[in-house]
Length: 412
Image 1 (cartoon, rainbow, N blue to C red):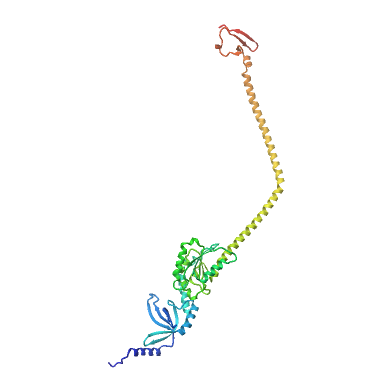
Image 2 (image 1 turned 90 degrees about the vertical axis):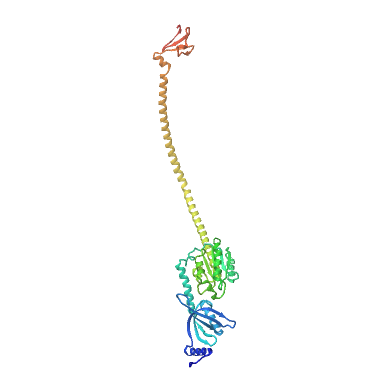
């Protein structure tokens, strides 16, 4: 064998020297962080990966290192700029030096980072969630809910030990107006990997008792800006967007909106601002009530004035109305009198006619009338004899004529 033979160390040394001669001092590389580990010496060990955009399968992988002296500078700068922790699962644009060690192999040493690239990627991720919610037709559902006129029954999602929750309650209870609020806490983890699951459980618990509350308030007191990533998930945003009660968010981040800020009914900056918003709703309702009371008082006064004027006008019109009523009554009485007199005269004529007829009938039926016609009347012992059977032979009777009378003895 004429070809040279190398030991593994020699071959790796050859690779190392070749890379050092051929490679530039530094490169800007886009990649996803799949692993991030910080050891006790402050050195950060990474794993960079690249996935196929269509299938999601890995197409490249490399180890990376950020030495402690560099990490102490880059990590705070990155987190302050992006509002996201330097952790696995994000895409980064880093400046690296390519190195090869005979024992440890190929590695990328990070010397700088461009946080604006990651910030843009996070914004794209948020936009994707919001676009999906809009396609599903739920993006603005919670915003379209009417805010109750008196939002006094409040379900709060927060950490039980959070200073922001205490500030929220203190602001409500010490307000000068002294409004009554019923506040019930539904504890949740507000930072870290458990934010999504914990908040979804809290929302489910409130949903079961939704008739007992007017609004939901999600507050987070203090904490790093990088802890807000838990609020940028599709499941949590979808649950908030479709929740049947208005949601108010005050998670203490003044610069950027999280996804749940975008879908919530109302977004404020801090827990104290959330309390101020609810107090403002109560002030508005109180102002409307005061306005209605003033309008009612004014309307009553105006009505009283109008009625007083009407009564005064009636008081002046009473004599005239009385005279008119009396004249009308006299006219009606006169008319009734004339009708009564006419009716009496008519009745008198009718009765006189009837009386004349009766008189004529009486006259026609009188004994004198019968005697004048040639009839006679027979009396026995002063009583009229109507039938022959009333008489027997020997009876003495009196026979009356038109003129005169005779006595006779019945013989047969």
